[in-house]
Image 1 (tube, rainbow, N blue to C red):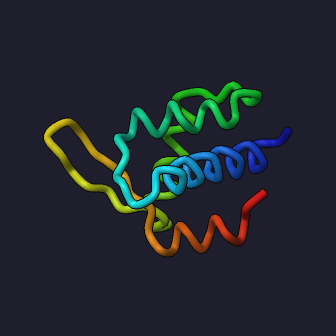
Image 2: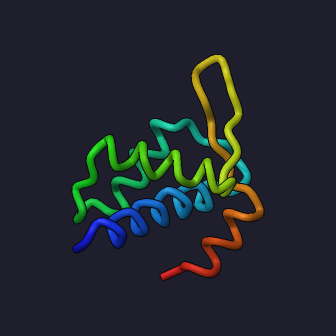
Length: 88
């Protein structure tokens, strides 16, 4: 599997994990754990997951909410549309 495919699968796993949580914001570490379970066959590294998190943040598919316990992410309307267009 090439790098762009891995990146796409990680991005989709992160966004799907957020969608599964509904409108509730999710801590980054919990989101990483949930996404890793979805793509366990890839055995993603922390660096790959962090890069995918930065990508979805840069593309404004998520919004970051600062809290006392760290950042929480929430899916945006653009993220929902991206997921609908790229669902399995």
